[in-house]
Image 1 (cartoon, helix red, strand yellow):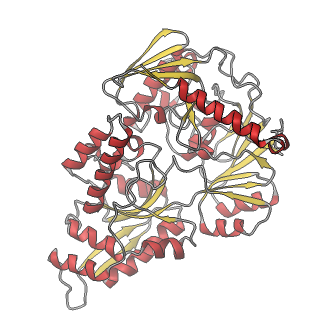
Image 2 (cartoon, rainbow, N blue to C red; image 1 turned 60 degrees about the vertical axis):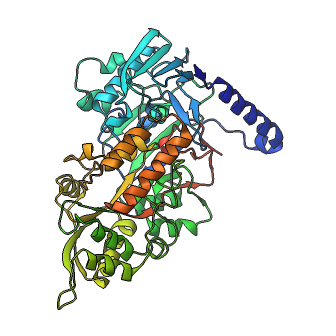
Length: 529
């Protein structure tokens, strides 16, 4: 069996050496106990159980209430959390996890392997990301502190899938009562988890109040007494609260106006680290079944008509980076050279000519509609308006269509009732979890954030199937490079920008979250100076 004990020991030794070398600096930055951290969010959770719901709104509180088996540092390395160690079998089809013996739920009941098995299989049955645990056939429980994942095939994305935001360990004695997990009343009230904080109060649409869990399994943590998540749909209002000191942290700040204003405030620190695993990309998704968009030359022409450098510099004030393809540049599997599209209007016109779309007497080749994702400006509304201007230059007349709200837009896209739409989609750490869903022909479904482009390429399906089980990291990276080149050539999506999420904190916040999951990590190490 291949063990990671040695790598953990080396990492720990490295940490000891670096702390010793830091001397007085470390002593001066000793975390303090106590205090209340108030953070703001513009998305309201329906409930607090991340085992059955994806997304920022639920994950922010869920990762504080529920612990997971592993967590990750800022180098994409898995770290012990509820699991104190784990081992893979040689064939990659079994993962044995050893649990901490001192971990208990908020009601005092010990956490056992039965809870792990129940949580994983419940997640598999209920979570929208079906690929996360699709390969998990069962979780065996040979003793209370050992869980063995049995897989139908190797699943190199499994450890990432065991992260706090994706697979919280929930108590079987609470949720195993036969009630539908998605609508279970304990998702919102009297929540029992095992994370660093326990639920004090949840007022939907307004705030989530969390208190320190004194029996948290990591000794001396969390440092904070309370975490209060305040909800307000207005970014600017949240920023004002941060400026006044009513809030101490504002994660997922990506609005250009907010970032510009925060940049000039000497009392605030802007952190762009902590979103590598989240991997948010803004793009223009194309319905590949609509004529003439079913011709890849037409889609390529659209890609050549846009200047991504202009978008990132002018529309996002330089805060964003140009997107390079299906996999975000911060991922270990990114292929920076896979995207050939740079602004070339003549090339775009040539491709449209080749596709038989000659300009008419008024210079128009065809008409299309661009839908706009609600709630975003710089990387959605402004991008749509810019795209309309650019497409006109190559003879394509584009009308813009707005939706009344997010559910309306989501319904339109889920029904495949669009030509092209702006969108923001997350990579979610490993391509198996957040990338495959957009491109697999088997995932063309009437659900938002699936393959709503109706994109089909048998070779892409084959590569993704192979990459999803490849255990050699180098070979896996090469497979994903081939995948990215194929998709960029087919152009079912025009990649625009990497969303410039930042975590804004006041200067009295110590140890702000900067792992690959950033604010979707437990805040047990955060303290107030």
